[in-house]
Image (cartoon, rainbow, N blue to C red):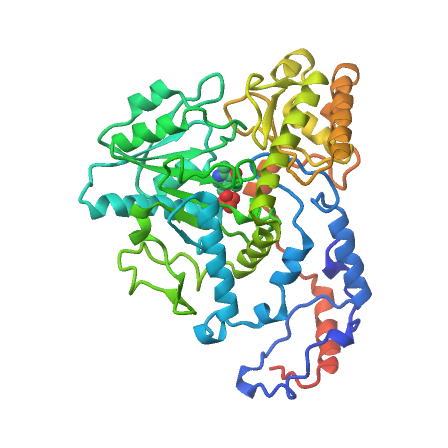
Length: 502
Ligand SMILES: *Cc1c(COP(=O)(O)O)cnc(C)c1O
């Protein structure tokens, strides 16, 4: 039910009504001539409505949410409450440097800490999503080649396990994508890489640990091959949980990396919420970094702009990026410290490997059984589907009935009927054990009552949605039923006497 359907003419929440326009001294010509169409509900109606809506959702605050590649982990409340201090909230993004030294100090320190975590020479905080960080990274690689007059490089090499944003980014930057295969142990096929590099290679985009949940065993060799051919190396560090502070992409020879703060560094995500994906660069890309960047000289923090970085690829976000997300990340890294970051990586890997071992014991097939999991791993239901007709989608939907959000399904595309499972470091052993029990029950149901699994979910507010229709023909607009409107307007007029109506 929509909030508008609770609307009753004249019902209001007076304590939160806007002040009368007169009292706010708004010039007559700026006052709106027609009233906005708003639901008329009491405060309690509004609270109940939105609380009920929130309870229909699966969320990390209510359920285990093992969504591989996209990391749904607990975000400490302290990070949010400090990022929301009124002094931060009240700060205008265009206020002078002299009145924002505290905020600039936080941003500067975050740049420095991320430099240390990634082993890079410079960090820009401006990108507002992983995909935008990638776009900036590849744009810098292009600017680098162009600045040297090296214009014959027209190709970006992307392993077939990559997130879809990688090839999309390369194409957006005007490159041709050369896809290379993965071998049966989940590593990039080195023969395919050697065959793909050459004078046309502008760079390689690598996710490590890859979306197959394994750490590239030949990363040093890959880095050597691509550099020798004159290409640069891009590190998709969307999810750093497995390596946080343990190994540094800079030490692996990478020239540029993006990190999703909304996965690893304490900003909740999903549903298109605000993101932030700082990019780190090796020394040779420093001249091309997006601006602004925070500098610290003679005890003062200030913005560096195009004037000082004339070859900068430019600006990609208003002002300096997503301040709220950056502040949460700053608090998070300060709370953890270097030692805490190591523990995040250790527990992320421990939880993933424990869960992988327990699911294997429970009868599930692991896609890369000879490899250690990083922060995530893949279960394949290929055999189960052949024997029982139960697909990864069926199992995912049945998990909802048992109180678990489904893992990522059908990604990466390489593994048939796959579930990409990432428990994250914030879950307890009891939660992981209970998840294994639920998975085991579904495996039994697949053999004994397959229809129960095929028709799941049975207990959710909506059953199976047509997700193609939902994406292609979304029905999101609410149309006002005409009957209410005239009444609504006169009633509201008396409630806010100072609003003038044509
Ligand atoms: C999430 C993710 C991205 C994209 O990040 P967005 O913020 O969603 O644009 C890129 N690569 C990998 C490996 C990811 O997991």
